[in-house]
Length: 120
Image (cartoon, rainbow, N blue to C red):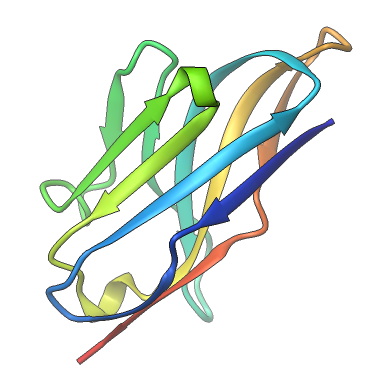
């Protein structure tokens, strides 16, 4: 079983910055790609950014240039640095990890989410 625990969300003024963290724990051999998604009230969950085990990144257009995803493989942790935050960035942010478990299967695990609220 794999657990993902996010932290770092909160209330920030427009133009400000936040750094989200997500640590994976449990019984697994390795973590493949990791990523961040978000879900605003009344909207579907959408991709924010992903990062492979080798460090290749991919960003949604609406955060490109304002956000940086990174990971520390030794700590099984992924980060999302968000700058120049906008009101429309308000959402619950979810961490996800594609994990090769000790049961020798590959699963997509999700965290419980962390709230990011951007105020004017």
